[in-house]
Length: 248
Ligand code: 6GU
Image (tube, rainbow, N blue to C red; front, side, top):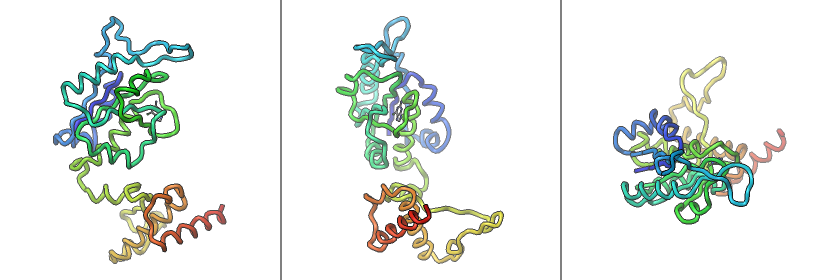
């Protein structure tokens, strides 16, 4: 996958992608991520990327022209992108399903917004997807772009070594993950659940699945609407929600 990021802080993007699983995949050539400095696409002496809002009001708005020029230059060099994503608190929420869809594309462009916003003509004609990472406001789009890229790129085949660890985890099945334990079997008086030491793989799989269902019912009941559950599991989630009410 080729990912190009348009930003006024290319160092923020490069720094975050220099370590860890994503960095290793870049070294292997599985991922090609590049940060493009938006200011390189300005033509005035001050390299201006923002201006006052029409209609007045506080703050500054990102000018359309540098963003258009940057995206056009990227597509000329790298070929057409399957998605041009603007990260903005006004976007649709980033979910596993969104990350999955983007991970199947060969080329994506991510535009990081700053200031009060980006000229709407960018969203209207250049952008295919507006994405938010949650209901809170950050100072700029660089951290959201990194969150989006990490969620997307780790789903690209060959990025994460153990594909089983990707398939089993939270949200892939629409459920939260089960608890995990490692040695020692007893730590400061707290023992690991017996079943995990039993060597009975079928029993372990059943325990993990029921813990996933139980946790999701308690912590994120909203996820149960879309989760695929057996009739028995559905009944268990109802009981779980009852016990939660009783215990407060
Ligand atoms: Cl994509 N940008 C900013 N600035 N704040 C956010 C966000 C994006 N998603 C949640 N908060």
